[in-house]
Image (cartoon, rainbow, N blue to C red; front, side, top):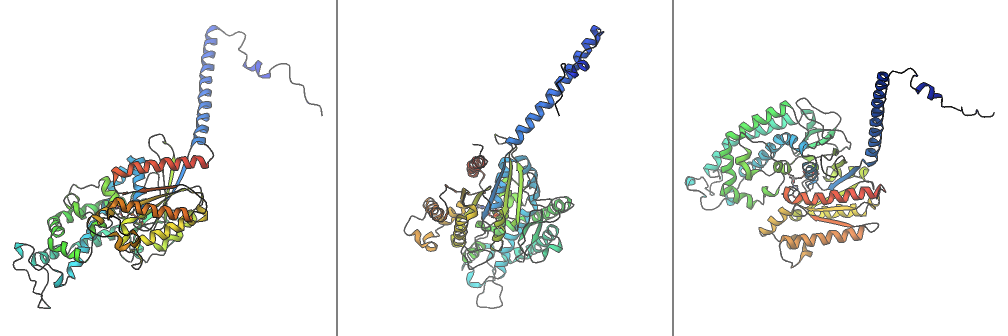
Length: 485
Ligand SMILES: Nc1nc2c(ncn2[C@@H]2O[C@H](COP(=O)(O)OP(=O)(O)OP(=O)(O)O)[C@@H](O)[C@H]2O)c(=O)[nH]1
Ligand SMILES: [Mg+2]
């Protein structure tokens, strides 16, 4: 069938042609209207063009945080948020209040439990303070109380802290959540729970408890502990009043020379542990206390399961970039939950806390922490699914490593291959870097770059620059992978 000939005139022409009898006013009005319509149409075109450009430019960057429990993964995530979504981070600081109180009470509880069980030979031979001239330290009598009276009195006055702790936990953790935890992976909304060792943890769950409970831990810019609302604010105030009332006893207990001696003899080094706030008792027990940035970074809330935190950069050249940071639980039973997140589209930060050379895992006292980190690092380096992923290594907790070595703990005693090298943090960091680099070289299925940093991720001054380098590297890698470079 032959095609129709095109008309010899534009059919729209007649419609669009101005009327023949148009007056000058009508013409001016028509032209103004046409100009308006043209402007609107241009604006629509421009917005469509911008939207398309935006979509093309829109970067979704995925970053996976790996490492054993207490290695500093969630803290690293909080550093990202502090640096790149500062207003969200600041807004959420208050949500950490109860967790910090719980961390503090837990440390006090450890001291109290230790003192309750002290043996006469663990006490210093001379009375530690003149007020203890009546100290009942008669080691010949089996029944005699062994603690100096001033300590016994403090313990008696602080006994109610057990109830304060129980109240805090009861308000933070719904009773139904106290059941033993069975590992399960999923991304959802967060709950605070408690495990058999009574360590409070956060795990993604099916429903968010917003009223008097918890907010999602999977939210734009949200990495706070997932409890919020009136109930927890009220609890925080109640607990704060209780802490304030006994703050003098808390300070006296922590600074008592006998207590320090006993802790030293028992090798209990609270200052190296997670959630340590005892050196700031004055500030943290004050009625006006609100958590600072540093407090949020130092707080300890264990992760169980896998959570994906999404946020957009609030400022800077990467403004609008969508970040998805995947934070996993690091304890041994959870390592298998990492695997579904292994793909070559994500970048990885692996955290190895090198201060753990003389410690064992909380979940398995027979396993040395450093050895566990080395084994995990080997497994991650050798994993074929991650063969094309550039791995970033954070040799973390360097501040604790430095303090340990400075206090006279000899690294070579635990890591024999360290040999006769000087027992200082600089040498130790260099040594660990070369060891982890060697594993990376040996076990990577195909050669790739090694990015190793010595970090203390709780430290805001040193971590900012390191995170900026990692961010640039991750974004570059993302662009390369999306073939935009
Ligand atoms: N002093 C010091 N403390 C750190 C450092 N990194 C982390 N911490 C603290 O160690 C504790 C554990 O850190 P998290 O970030 O909760 O560890 P995690 O790897 O997320 O642990 P899981 O959730 O159990 O897998 C927290 O109290 C942190 O504040 C560090 O470099 N130096
Ligand atoms: Mg964590």
